[in-house]
Image (cartoon, rainbow, N blue to C red):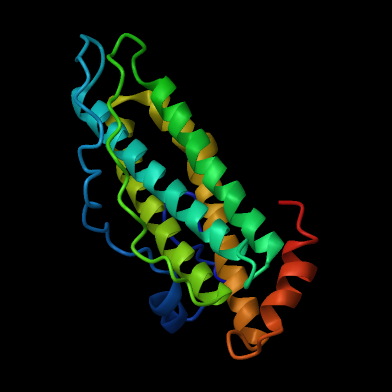
Length: 217
């Protein structure tokens, strides 16, 4: 599996052919704004030393992260269904849902404490809820993770010029976590396909128990 650099790309020594990079590992362009959440937070009072453009971008990132958390929660619920019963798949996405919310809380704390409280709007439903199988869920999660990563890169680019504290947080913590998660999802997808998913009905059960069940993450 090709390796990701922290700030958006693939390592030169990944060993992947050009075809592989084009097919599976290129970060997709920024997706269109999600319905109902582009302005999910009411404008905050602008203070003298806080950049309004950076503030608005962080607010939009917060909305995107909340939506991502909602989707990961939906994925976790799918695996916890009685007719699916893949416990460790469920825990895997439940942990990611919690991580997204933790990032939201940190971003909100990073905003100027003198600003007014944000007004949350209703989150749109996940675009897909009948996930079909574990491989399909992982593929959807990978695309979502790449979209979040691309959004973070845009925030990082702006913060580099306007807000050093935000930039430092993204470089030291957040971007690294997102790159690791993307790599992990890609590895899981590759291994499941090698084992014959989704055609082999036992593959996901074995993967759930032997791979995700033994994982420390």
